[in-house]
Every structure is written in structure tokens, then in C-alpha cells.
Image 1 (cartoon, helix red, strand yellow):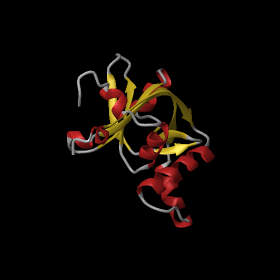
Image 2 (cartoon, rainbow, N blue to C red):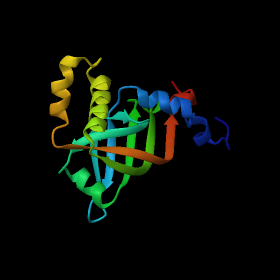
Image 3 (tube, helix red, strand yellow):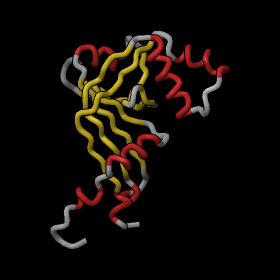
Image 4 (cartoon, rainbow, N blue to C red):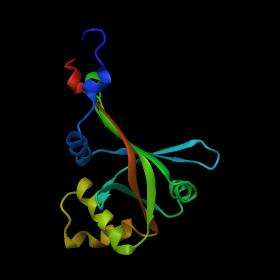
Length: 155
């Protein structure tokens, strides 16, 4: 790579690439702010609700309490083992707490299908149990940062 080349511009994903990456099966790191300003970061499975990335969590969990106090949320989804394979997307925004049963179920089915396979009626009890005493945090994104080191051609 010649001097003066903006590597950031080279590795940034297009909006279509971001969407395709997020549609793959990954874990994400969900970050919220604790009462003392420290960051609470946890690994989560995610799905999609109404076109937005979303997660389900226990209604009394630390992350749910944090979001009720301050809806700021960041999600980091990443993949790759070596430097030349690293790729990821950071989504920064505001979480909407969702508690309506039908919307919870929509997200529950999305998560189920992403990590377990096609949803069938037999899975309804499993999804219902998964959503018991839960809320959904639906992320309204205000900033997206992405990278795909495979674009550097180092491999």
C-alpha cells in the first residue's frame, strides 16, 4: 500500500455489504451504560424487528435496567480470526423498549430462525418460553461504522 492511501476508506463496507454481514449468523456485543457511567458489555444473539437489529433479554436484567435509565446502546458484530480476515459493524443509537406480546413474538421467531433453523409451529412453545418475562431492545441506529480487512488483499 502506498503512503497517503486512506485505509479506512478502503475497508469500509457499503450499505449493502453491512446488511449482508448483519444477515449472517453472528453473535454481537451489546453495550449499555451502567448507573455509574461504566460500560456494560455482553454477548448476545440478535434478530430483526421491523427492519431494526433487536435483542430479547430478561425484563429485570442489568442491560434492561440500563436502557430504561438511558436508552443509549451500541452493538458490535464482528467476525474473523486473523487480522487479514477481520470484519465488523458497530451500530450506535437509541434502544426502544418493546413489551407488546406480538412484537416480542416477531423478534423471538427472528432469533429462533437465525440460530436454530426454520420456524415451525412445534417451536411456538419454545419461543414463548424464551420470551417469558422478557423485553425486546430494538436499536434505532444513528451511526454505523464498518470494516472489512479482506479488502486490503493481505491474505
